[in-house]
Length: 430
Image 1 (tube, rainbow, N blue to C red):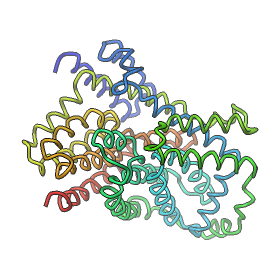
Image 2 (image 1 turned 90 degrees about the vertical axis):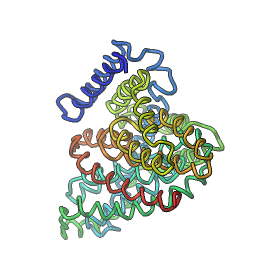
Image 3 (image 1 turned 90 degrees about the horizontal axis):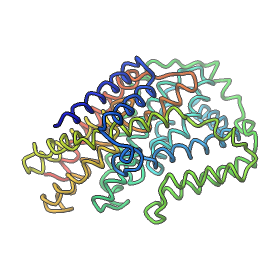
Image 4 (image 1 turned 45 degrees about the vertical axis):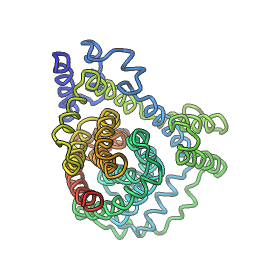
């Protein structure tokens, strides 16, 4: 690698260390790192702001912005209070039973929507119901972020890297359902067990709180029925457009912005109320992170790492599959999995063709998808959903540190990726 590549690696590692140790605010670390990358010409303004592959992913930024505005309008209806009381009553006031409900709902919805949208919708419910039960919301939020990443692995639209893989590999929505979804169901069952081991034993059931919950009438929480129906109608259309992306060809960011615009324009909610829930620090953090990772791509660092991983397989399909799975899980824990998959997919495409095309070689696409999606659970910055959850938690007075998330994420990633390895081997390589 040239000098500039080494400089970009040093800047990225320094920024990542500051984020991990929380010596400075993560937004300051990301912006500072991005600024240095631009200053030393590891990347340029054109690449940082306009490149589809190495710049700020504006689709992600505006998808988040649009959905945050929609959530802001929904909050005015009282529907989150309704759902919180309903969920708590269904769980009979038992915290772990409630966690299981929220985790399964999150995973299921993440398979149909993108995982970031799902955590934006479920987090307000989590805070309210935890307040009712007087339990710490942090374990719930961590579990939900991880469940969204696992559930999103199941479908083409569930996680942005899957869209990139489908485009490059010529794979359909049904291909993902057939090859990814069965294993995701197994992983979710295992994940529920991990939640009990990591969190469940620390919860305490409070009969008095539970009886108070059971006495509540969730219907009284709805503050504005007209606004609720308007919001739900728009949200339903937005969800339908997400699912029909392969047919409609509208980017999720466009759909989210249209939905947000319609809600703000057609309802009595003021602009100030609608944007009150926008997590501006989270959006800025993503922008800085995209610029830093883009610089690693521009200077050839990520490409060299990907090529080295591919070359190490020596043309053997079995070794290539396990190598891609493991390398993708590790690298996606460190850098955002979107630019990683964008960089790795051309290499995987070549390997697939060398292995006989989308016949036996198709397993390499599934290895890349599983590794990138599940690897995002390993650290607090490994996936967009994780970063959003941390931002929401800080905004609501329950900050989750980098290592508080990561100490659980490493366990979940190790277990889920380890389980995927024999699945790929037995189904495709035997």
